[in-house]
Amino acid sequence: MTDFEEEVQKMTFEESIATLESLVKELENGGIDLDKSIEIYEKAVILRNHCRKILDDSERRIEKIMETADGLKTEDMRID
Amino acid sequence: MPEIISVTELNTRVRDIFSVTPAVNDIWVSGEISNLKKYTTGYYFTLKDASSEIRAVMFNSARARIDFEPRENMKVAVFGSIDLYVLRGSYQFKVATMRQSGIGDRYLAFEALKKKLQEEGLFEPSRKRVIPMYPKTIGVVTSQSGAVIHDIITTSESRYTANILLAPALVQGEGAADSIVAGIELLNKAKVDVIIVGRGGGSIEDLWPFNEEKVARAIYSSAAPVVSAVGHETDFTIADFVADLRAPTPTGAAALILRDKNEIRSQLSSLSQRLERAIDNTIRAHKHAFEVLDARLDPSNARNDLDMRRMHIDDLSKSMDYAFTNTVRTMRSRFDLLDSRLRPERAIEDIKDRREDVEDIMSAISSDLSLKMERYTMRLDAIGERPENRIQSILQDSEDTLESDSKQLEGLNPLNVLTRGYSMITGPDGTVITSVGGLNVGNNVTIRMRDGTASADITKKEMNQ
Image 1 (cartoon, chains in turn yellow, brown):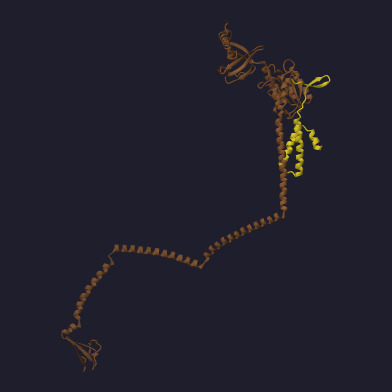
Image 2 (cartoon, chains in turn yellow, purple):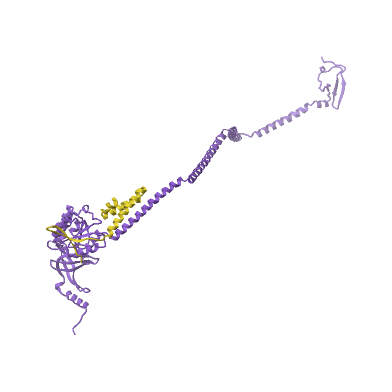
């Protein structure tokens, strides 16, 4: 895993899609040498895949929170 | 057989009873306006007091008779009658006129608090926090048992995935405000990304906790942005004004906070397409640049290039020749013009021209003179006799004189004397000899007499003494 891939893993969806958008714009503007262009492209692909992964993961927690003597406590909530 | 009547008949009978019962006709009723709705035909509202309510209607004809705008929570006294709507079997108070009997206490409190918080800057648009586009966890302050949390969970299912953390709270009645404040604080401690504070619709009393100052201040001091979702579209609470975003309903709140997943997917795929197109274009551009360079290195292309340049030079050279010829031609014609002005023939012609001019002037003068002469002559004629006549008279005179002279001369003719017996001697030369002195002896003379001549020789001459 490259440094960039590790970096992306820690990114939120919002950060990822924003970064992807700016890389696409950079590439669209052109005037970049071939090596750099391909590097940008590779990064963009990593970000795109990361975004897709987040979107496909629909697992969520539905909980309720309470304050007890021991501090904050959360527990799963049943949905009717 | 008992009488069986239709529903319509029943409703009609009740209406008829109402209409003739003085106790419910042309009466004044006091109450508070709530649930006010304006339609093209007039106002529809609920008139209520602490424990009861009745539907009321005020048509435009009645509305025109009052000089104020009926408002929610307004305390009024209305005059009118009970009327039954046969179609629904419901009765309502038909307002003929209305008086304002004092602004509702709650309304006053609400307005006062709103004004106060507004002045403090709690509603300032500039202090509204941005709602995160992709929150990880949404906190919800509402009742654990109500429809609100259920609606939020259901609505968010098909949307961007976020965890939901509920802080159960009382949303109406005693202690509700404190409970809501605690919920907001609890969720801030749990570091949620955004908080929904809400409840379903209800009466103004039901919504009241959301009009309390402590709730407003808790929303204001929340670290996480707050979305209010209280009641329905038309009910605005103080909480709505302070919140960073107001959603009309809890379902609306979930929809506003979480983006539709399909929408995000299509955004992502459009980005992806743009990415592929951009890299394609980049590669193509580099490839093209390479091909251009490569082509220029090809010797056959170099020759082409050289030919092109040669043709260009030819073209330039042709243009230059043409331009030069043109210039020379122009200059020559100009020279010819100047030269012709300098030639002698031209000068003579000039002089001729001038002479003709002078002659013209002279003839003009001379014709002018003869004209003048003529005029003088005419003037002379006018003055005296014509010269011709004068000459003629002179001639006549001379003729007369000549005639008398001639007669006189006739008398003197020597030949005439001869007839009278005289002779005339002439010398050899023909001259008349009148003296002896003119004669010499031996001279031959001619003696002329009246009838002829005779010749004689002089033999002797003798002079008179």
